[in-house]
Length: 324
Image 1: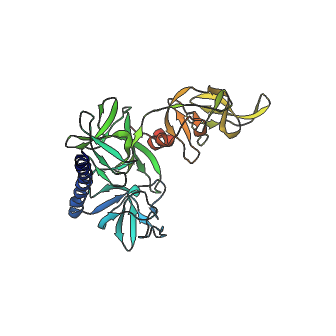
Image 2 (image 1 turned 135 degrees about the vertical axis):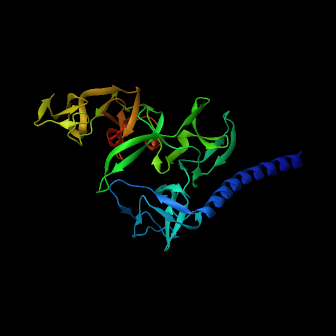
Image 3 (image 1 turned 90 degrees about the vertical axis):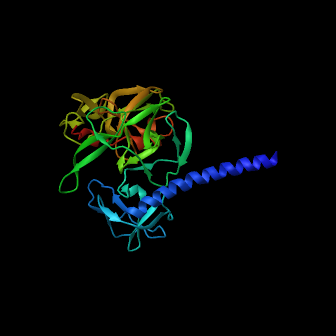
């Protein structure tokens, strides 16, 4: 019996190794053909120092963004980096999270280790989040409210975003979950994908439960960073609301009274309520946009971890600049 158990364990181990080796050999074969990376674009930045030496030390010299460049040798893990890094010469290494496409191929970057599924939803393999994953199909431009999508920025001469356009990669529903195709009958759960060709994989809505320990309600906020009456236009003057100084702000075409910290006075949500959100503000102290409005809930008032939510939600300012 012990011998049989050992044989079964050995077979399982070899199968696991075979899965890793097949993935690695696939990457190696393609690398030999092209060996290029395309660096991501960052709004407001024409060049950035997202490069490191072989010991993981950040280098002051910049790497061009939104640029295709050659790399040498095989990608490798270096100290302090979550993902594999690519040697682009002169002792500089670029990590995968600064890269869109690898070897000219459509590329996923993963949020975490992921299973591979067949069309019936059965697990048939696994993938490491540290390495790029190639996929079949292509992004399609859309104006529809797709469940999952990406936003691509249009850039002005000063390297700032002037507008954005929406694209989506076709997905398939299998047993109540959504999957992207890797090709050859293989699929990966959509929610395990961080980026598609360097563009953030976005969800059009996430369900959250609001909570306020020791309180019965949680506050609602505006974000006053524009003069747009849709997103938060501050009117002149100060008013008193129950003895509290407040500004009048037009948001979503309605005038509300806003106190300290951009909190809307007289507008709160009962603790325990489930709310749908579809975007976020800049971190690290995130606020989440209530879908269909330009009002927000603080991440500190959300029950449970918000890591996955933050990873899947776009910035609200990019949604407001949609062309399509």
